[in-house]
Image 1 (cartoon, rainbow, N blue to C red):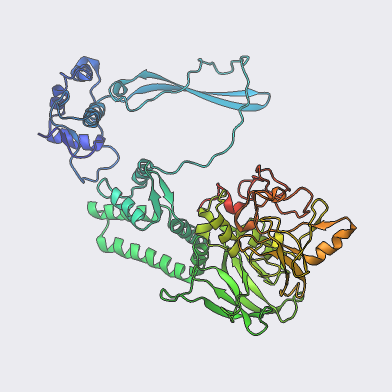
Image 2 (image 1 turned 135 degrees about the horizontal axis):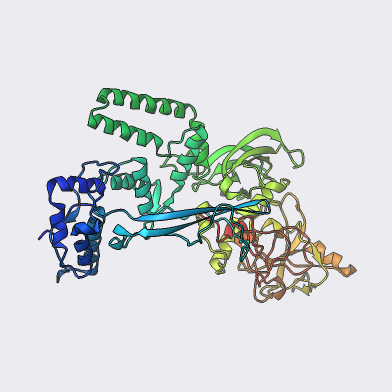
Length: 589
């Protein structure tokens, strides 16, 4: 049993309906309804003057017959609440389309107060007409008194409201359909196909609330074409094309004429976009990883030589690209030599130059031209940087500490409160010191930079062999005396813990110099509950570890166990001093 006929109704559809059916007969069928039956009776009363033959409306795509009630119903036994609400909407809409429009009066008042101009408006409904039955719309406004031109009065209140700007909400599917209808894009039957194509091409995604969010691909395309000077992401070109096709259907334009014009416009845009494709690639680089590897290549890409390896002194250190797309500088003697310099994960491009560093020895040490992704570095850093990876470049060190060396997905997905042992070990292995190029500690904890503290004491013990030792501040195990083999500290002796579970170490000469009332603070690569003076929260790359008050004068931001900042820097994303930008909860994908 048919109750409704296809799709929605508007004034144009009802105009067609009058020529096909007796509209008054449909209204008469609704006289017995307990809710809107009385309104239907008013419509049919000539004395009420409520009836109006609908106008032709804005446009009619003639894609389907109008929706209208074909049979009276006060509710069927098998109907759900949604069925009943849908039938009510259709009937009320039809009755509204054959009703007189609402009539109202609007008053606009302009006031001059001490040279400042103010305006206010108010609206009063004189005759509601169709609004009596179509409860889904409201028309009204604020009530204001009746004024006379030139009248003076004393305001009862004067207020100054303050507020802040907010970004507009995400576009909903209903909003998008309305925008497409206003722009003349698509018909009732094709609009949803257009939206589906946008989703299938992954230009945007739709959430459970039917609101659209742009993807990286969608934003990159908009940015790239906008930089070219084309507004292809706006509806103008498509709207013009559909308007021409409509002109063909009604006979005002010829098909070949419209086809030729459209192809010429598209071809001109295509040829110009091909000449300026670098702008599209630059926009893509802001949102995507760039990789030159073939799909079957699982080996690291090997680049040009940076310098001779200072660890094995046999092979060269070369620029490599890892399988995940990130860069590193590693020794060609791997796996026999594991000397490596991890580079920031925000690098999109890197190339060796012929420029040598004047500070690092032994040379030559060639500088690298870096290109960073703008979305992943603080705004006060340039995306192009010529730097040295051997420890003298302060900017590169800061970006390594801020951005870390991991991939973007894992870095953004990792929470700031991760405290498991495995996560700590992974971070320790991943982040290499930018000063000595060794793993196991960050540049903030580099032994060559560990300051001496007046508040801590290191106690030596005698080993059975007669050599002196000190206990580990983490686990209490006697430490072993070792000799450093790094470039900056070659031959320098230090104590390290025998256990592989903790990375405690301290320089021997710093202990010897403690006789003057100052003793070195033993450095450890992670916090431990057995060492209260070293307790603190950790961010990725060992940058969030708390520090004992007075033990460091660096301007880098560190966070105590309570989350309070120890020094003055703040997160560049949200300004919160309690965390770094790489673990900021407000930083999106």
